[in-house]
Image (cartoon, rainbow, N blue to C red; front, side, top):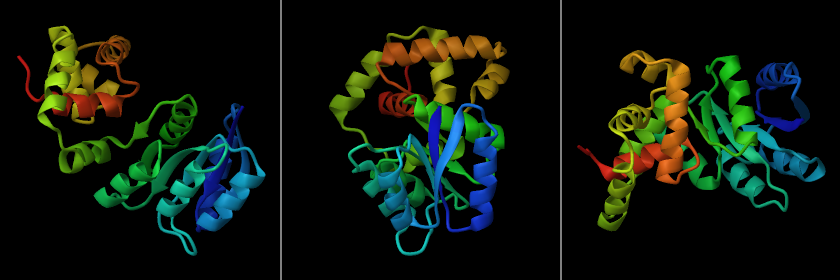
Length: 216
């Protein structure tokens, strides 16, 4: 059972997210909080596996709360869930220790999937946010670029095609449509790509692909 906490200053949003999560047989909402300070108190009082945290809140904002939550003796995984699709929010949330970043208009099934993925140790970013984050904030030194190119060269030509689309923030369904493949085949390719690149999730693979630059 995944023990979740919902942190948002809007009572209706908290209620909606709580109802959504509680309808999943493998998720239990054990705490709610209306601001960052209350989130720290709740996470200290309850064992929380995954916290969904808003960015803009009174008393203590979500970015500060994420940093404080991650510093706890038993830190929860954190998904930032916000209305505002702003680059600085994405970057600051990830820098503070968030494991995922989604918009509040994300489909309910995707929010549930994100909770399961993050609880299992993966990262989950809204595709457009991930793409802009990589483009705007990530900078690479020459040694890092050389290492990245060496790893990418381990891939088959087809895997490089999949990686290129993954780096643009495309979902497995998008990649399958573009390359004329089954989605299950794309999933298999992505799994092999992560292993070959020695990374643990799609975001890290996308960063490494951008480090490598165009490859033949």
